[in-house]
Amino acid sequence: MKILDTYISKAVLMSSFIVLFALVGIFTFFAFIGDLSDSQVANTKIIDIILTSTLGIPELAYQVMPLAALIGSLLALGAMMEAHELVVARAAGATKISVLQVVLKTSVLLMLVALLLGEFLAPLAQAKINELSFKSDRDMGTANNKIWIQDLSAFVSIKAILPDCKMLGVNILELGSDGKLSQSIYADEASCSSEGWILKRVKRTSFKGDAYNSSYVKSLVWPTELDFNLLGLLSLEPQKLTLKELSLYLHFADEDAGDFQQWSQAFWTRIVHPLSIILMTFLSFTVALSVSRSSSVGGSVLAGGALGLVFYVLNELVGNFGLVFNMNSALAAVLPSLFVLFLTGWLFRRIP
Image (cartoon, rainbow, N blue to C red):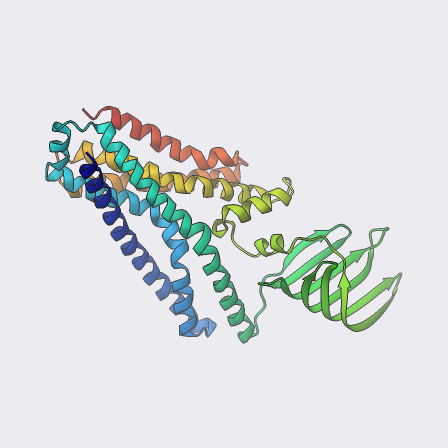
């Protein structure tokens, strides 16, 4: 049985990785073509576009891994059914449960690869993409969208956040006890220290009634407890953040904030996504054994692809529904997977 287990695992893994490379190659090519078209307007260097497309591969591979696992497993298991290899194995004593266990163990390896890509390699690549994007914007003289955040009685806006705790275009508006603007501080650049933020090339304006007084200093320390790591998350899309980064934001964020639902749902979706790889291989095994007995490998792939498309559409619909109607984030993330799991379980029980 060990020989059979190894044979099935190798077939599923090889087929899944081949499909993964094909999907990543296709999506990366079309993304490169799209960025190349935009570069004619944005005047972006081609080398930057190539680097951005290449650095986006880990996150893309993480996102399409469930689809690759579904199609790859269908191809491998469907070919075995068409060649009657699984029929012979079952006739020799291998039950459908034992074969399913081998397939699910293989899917765990695919899940670990996806976690390595999404939680470790993709963040490093995304940080480099952000640096390239900022460099391109700065060379063209364009301004990024500002980030606004409140710190006690002060409101802070930041034009750009860079790695190593560096910020550009920091504007601080401090309110007095009467709720009126008491001081405005603008710094070209800021960095972190144990005492707060070190502001450089600072213009400080104090307001008292209708009068104001402006002064310029090379640097000053602004005491604050704002977490720089948390600020850096605000400039990124929640869907591209890791579980650690999303949990950090949810720990400090206000549940009444307008975008809290979006971040919470992104957190639960990030948890469910690796588990969906196991679900897709379970689905592929069930479809392969149900369809391939009376059809070709193409029929199995078509049937599985249709179910995979249903799963994707359900994810999008339920996700958007949850955001619009403030649905429980965990339920919105898990509901499509539960539906596919019950459907797959029903089909699995019908296999003799």
